[in-house]
Image (cartoon, rainbow over all chains, first blue to last red; front, side, top):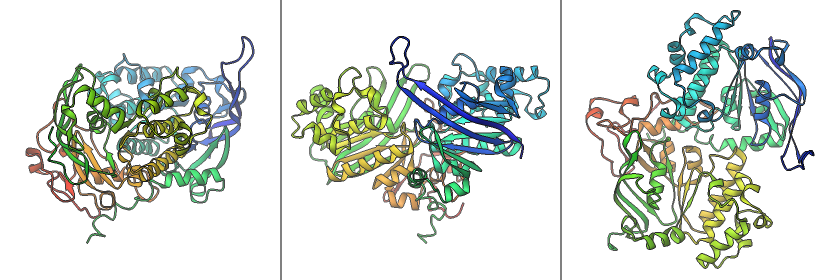
Length: 276
Length: 320
């Protein structure tokens, strides 16, 4: 398969602000020499707990942070060689908290139309004709078109997250980086967003880097997964392998933590049968 | 005060509780309507539902934690050991908040004073309540390091602060713990640690627990009985074992299917919850329900008596 996004030897260190005037404070290595690649059309999950560096990595992949060393390549070309607009048409990012990532004074329709206008300025882009209007994008993300005239403050959490995803998708990027997009949502809203993302992936072949702390969620959505701990990738491989027989003790622990929710897995499916 | 009408073993009795909020733009929002619920001594009760279903409002009304002018109407009774919290005088209410019922908040960073050392905050609680237990003992019970008293809240992680809230609850000598999504802001591993700790505390200290979460799997793990809220009404109330095996309300059934699991297709509930500033007639779940018929449109279903459920077409459901 064609490599779409490649991260090569990425390292990033943050320094706390405690240092004296010109000296740096305590160092925290958020990413240590990370290599990762995503092919077109595949969904890759990145799993890790808080502070494991997964958000830092996602920001580097989307070009929002520059790494201390290493480089990001999209379709074989270094990320910094794209103009910001070209970059947005290659890789989009959706953040954890939709209330913070949406401009509170703009309406839903304005945000989507702005992205569509920007897309038109790039003549080489070739999005499917059925995605050329704001209405169609709203429909694709199961959003009521009435919301086009309302502002984020009047929407529910699920609607905001759909809008944030729709806004990134409106540029028709070949890859979407999804940073904990469901963790601030209810189980039911989260489930509908997961379904939506899978549908987008199947219909338009958008590759996705799905970042989560929930191993079971990663198992559901992804084909391959990477597990991160303290800035390093401790395990990687096909989802089936990693989830089925985790080798690293940390991954086993994560799996046990996720298994809590697994117990009742089949319960409701067999409801009634046992009582009969 | 009415002392007579105490159900045997009930520490908390909620009768026909309704809460209407005054919203700046939406007007009156019916956050809770006609909720009746008994909580027995030593019981761990799970409260499930989506955002906006009234779970937090229920906890807030138990301690009357409403700001001035926030609510337009609060009606019904909440009896704590037979005494109506709704009718308590301010000093009685203060005693209740300090001694009887302790609320553990979702965001631990906002539950502590950021400029006071943890040791002083904990000592103050111990002194005020005349607790027999010392700080080191409380910290150890909650799995915290003995050096923590010298630190400030911002030095601790979310998981540690959440543990500290439990230590504070023990220091206050509370009999009922109200915990509002205590693990939502934590990652998977610390979430399990907190849940384990909560489970141990409830058993060892024989506390009564009201555990609010939208995560049904946690409720199943931690509690013995669960109630499900939808759009401000209590729609199902049953022992956890039954609720997860044989959900009777179509909403509960759908909610259980939304839990990510490797063994089955992820379920989705179509549509959005109703607008509570203008609640529709009939069953509130009717527009999103796959079992809905004409009767659901017109009438509000009553609560059935045994395995309590509020639905005309209640299950058990076979393969759907």
